[in-house]
Image 1 (tube, rainbow, N blue to C red):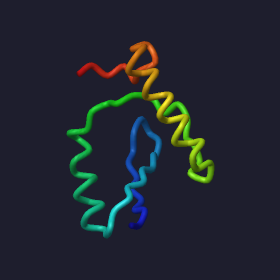
Image 2: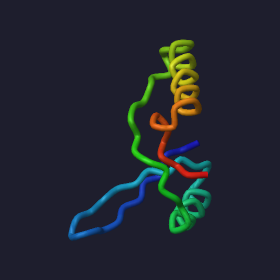
Image 3: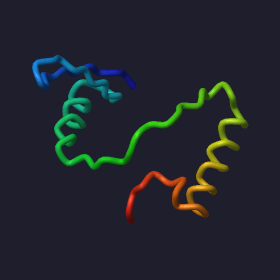
Length: 78
C-alpha cells in the first residue's frame, strides 16, 4: 500500500489529504467516493502499535465502556 496525496482549496486556503491505496487508480476511485462519506466523530487518541497487548486491552475497555455507558460512545445513532 502507498500513501497518495491530494490537495484542494477551501476558503482561500490549500488543504491536503492522504489516501492509502494500492495504486493511483484506486486512490482516485476512493477519492471519488468521499462525497458519499458520513461523519463518524472526532479522533480522540491514537495508540502506537508498539504498545502491543496494552493497546488491545485499552481498546477493549473503551469499546466495553461505550457499549455499557452510551455517553462514552462516538455519538453515532444506529
